[in-house]
Image 1 (cartoon, rainbow, N blue to C red):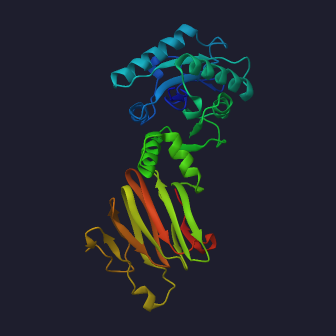
Image 2: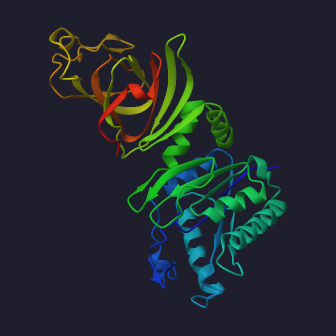
Image 3: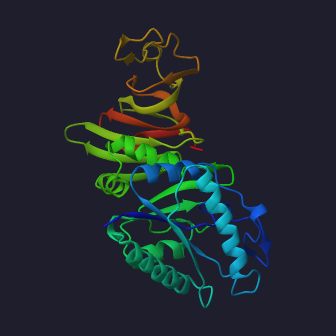
Length: 343
């Protein structure tokens, strides 16, 4: 059997704020189609990974008389052509309408449509992916038996719902292609549902800047290991730890780590300590010379930096997403002191 990805359209493939009528958001003309950044790359990634691609969209604007079925099909046909011109094969699309605007009604209609597509195309839904921004999207994917659900979080969608994974997706930032790629890098294969299931075996902490996966945190042995998945356009909090000593190693991507020296209330003898910056080529000449200066250093795959207790620091991915391995002494939330919040 085949595996597939089922995309919602509004809020996932195109922005859903192009036309506002009576509080409802519709795209009623092709000229109003506003593609979300990264959506071509996300489709290409999934196509290369062997997934069939289907669009399933809820268009109650037809029932409400705002547009005809032929008009909406015409817009989707032109969008389909846009993807073909970018060497992307969308295997099909379906338009849904529900009797009313309740989440339950929309979810039932969408789940029914997805099951029909699965039957007609020999799709194993348990190995497939559903991507949407609304609560009824995720409910529909669960009803249909789709194995992995991903929710896009944007200005016009619903708040976080019970999806397997989420990504930021507002009118200026889209991270679906980055999410898929960093998960592939993290686990070393292209089976996205498998990647997400493996990641979920770890203790998962959602951050403003991305996600933490805790491999181990042992208070008795005083050791901890985490995978940090950094999303672009975000930055971690500026913080320090009283007791925790940690080493960051870049596994993928490019990372900017800002160092502000030791906490100013510490003794002079501690202020004179320096972090050690290493790479596969031995100790780097970029080791910090002053504990009082703000230092930004760019790290690539294989580079590491030791952050000693009381060292003020923060990090962010440069250009695209990145993956860090954090190896440290035991992590205690009460040992983290934030001077500026993540953003």
